[in-house]
Image (cartoon, rainbow over all chains, first blue to last red; front, side, top):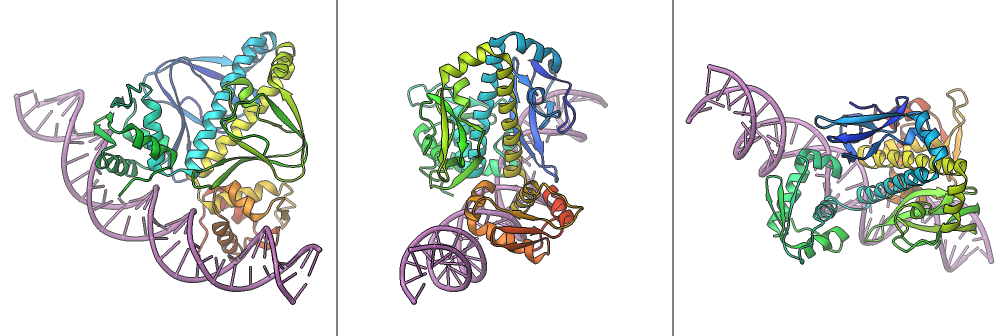
Length: 194
Length: 194
DNA sequence: CGTTGAGTTGAGCTCTGTCAATAGCTGTGG
DNA sequence: CCACAGCTATTGACAGAGCTCAACTCAACG
């Protein structure tokens, strides 16, 4: 565990190596991942600027190195260094944009759309509009928690997508066979037959 | 309309008077409200710092006065005025914290919990643990879009809460009769009988 | 008193979560 | 080199939350 939600924050962290998940837990123990952080990314900046506590939980997912920055140091630095402040504003703004999309997805889209959007987002190598392979960097169990669903439901939707001929799943490798159909699915233009 | 999502942003706005909703639309036209803004609040700051476009839509809900600030002016001001930058960082951080809660609610809680939490949040006057009245500042139709549900479902849950003796609903006035039960509901400790 | 928008109620259905059982891999140790 | 333990993943059966469509009620206001 890096930190628990609602606990006082003395500072924030930057990932040097490894992988950290930031997530929320329901009362029953279900988990929603807000963001996965990799090398170079800052974690837990929010309480540096507003409030005293972390808004969510953070946990390493593998052997991980972190740098810790006490909040007061950062605030001093920012006060003296306007361009650093602008960078931090950009970081928070990007995060806000992401969260906006996550809220939209959770509230307005059903799972097939979310999954299609995720796959397309991961495969940023549109070789023509041909077929490229996305290799998941997480297990399907973790992916289900990113998408806000259960492992079982994810498995079923992946199967339906395979049967529809949109993708081909081999372990963690997912080959995109029909990019345009996935795009239609992600937009909500089309629904996935059962 | 103040602005549409995915359109280029020339600057941002501050509400002087009135009320503005920031929201997302699904392909079918369903609406999720991200935030309601009132006097004094800034809208659309994200694209000033990251990306070029607005992440969501904004629309006035009544007669409204807005101030407009071109992005370049703001950036100049921030570069020269570190404490203004710190304030802006605080604004974005608070928003991020709110969005974190919204994501948690949408993904991990069911409607009765969300509604209970909303009512408790609105009634910041815990007179003893007695019964105080929350007067909705929006219609129930709008409230349903804040909570991420439909008008009909909201109506049903309000009824169930009334029948359980937790609240008493009279138009837009909602009297809290059993605060502790609402709190248990909001935490997910208890579920609402049908 | 009619019109309009807000709110309620009913019926049916779909998505998706849960429980439970099964299957497949992977790495460890005998 | 094989068997077993322990994940990871799949599949089936079932139930419940909540969405949609549609009809209906209600209050306010001219």
